[in-house]
Length: 613
Image (tube, rainbow, N blue to C red):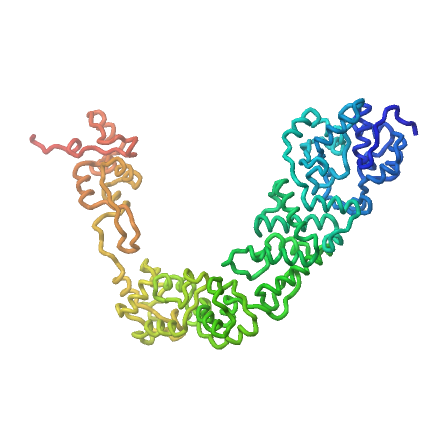
């Protein structure tokens, strides 16, 4: 193969893509054009093909072993290897180029005879996505903006040319920073250094993902949006996670304990997502990947040992055995015991200390076997679902009666931040009062209906109907085919009479409009214009507020005005003919027809005069 007349020096840490791109820049052609002209496979250069790189080295008179040593070799679908380290595409910059502006200025100064774009070379570490800092100059790498020109994707010299005019500006604006633990670890892995018994056996991409996720949760909380992190935030997260995990499994457990202690003191700690959030999500979603087996097992064991996980529940793909821990909340639920009472008995048994008084019921953890022994002695209340079943009441009706104070929970949700519980004796007392005056119902007595049906027909609340029953204001019957609340039938007419409100003395908009002899829309316009007065009153049936017009107001308006429509009916004249006659007589409407939407006239102007005058 003919050797090129012009060449560039090959550096030990330079990528083949950078070297071939600089060769092209030395001859004033793009990387793809150089490869095409000299029979080199562009893809072979990008994917580290050994034969292609040897021909490129001979073409430039460079050492092929140096070029091969720095290559990222395609080793499978989305996988590359360098010096024996397997790298997934997620930890590589394949479509964007990162450059240290200070290193670039140093390259230009070191090769004054070359054009800047031919002098600046791409370091292998710049292709690693987790590396965002120059370890030599301690400043952030500058990532060249992505351009929509696929043929230039891997052309390093072409990308560096976009930064050359502003290299000094980037160096001046750069804020010095520490590369962080994760970047240092990644570069060490690339050099074959073994430093972490937990991370080293994992593929580099998996180790980076674990560190960044754990660090993000530690810095920003369990619900942190990993994808929304900026480059600086991801750098900080990766460094924090790597520092905490590198030492090995025990260090990872210490991090988990720290994350658990950071959770709000009164949050229910009944699953790994509460404290570990995105970290738990990561290990859950990667259940089929062996790379995460060790950290997944560590997290699973930690959760089972330190959280109140029920037996049979699946945690990170594995079913949990017998429960080890209870909280006051789970123990109370398991035995239908009021938690306040449960706390007193647990304290008397020595299972709770004084300091637990400040803890949420969800965060007071108790040894399961000892706690269950105490709770079995305290059973006696029902959950809302069980209480509804006991008295045969639908949920909607139960909620109405609870809100009205007719059924009172033994433990209030607002006060205890948990689900209400109802004493059996209170429910029995309520049903006894509800059925105290009821008589057996004869077959098919349509005068009596169920409480929800009566409330709907009478446009009132079921709580009002129940109060009438409890006060003995209406007659009741017991349906032999139903039990409990739904078996109580109430006299419809009695409830209707009791809940009806007195008439307000006004007409509805529809009735007022018909009385005046116009439409609803015209009446609305008359009210808006002040020609008709209205007021808001309660409907006597459904008690909803509605706009009304007093009967006196309707009479007043009709005594003073008449619509063209009603006048035409009175005179038995076509409305258009009558309008023409009124116009010829110079009689104008009392209100602007365009505003009101109809024609009204003063009655005294259109009323015929008596004969003989």
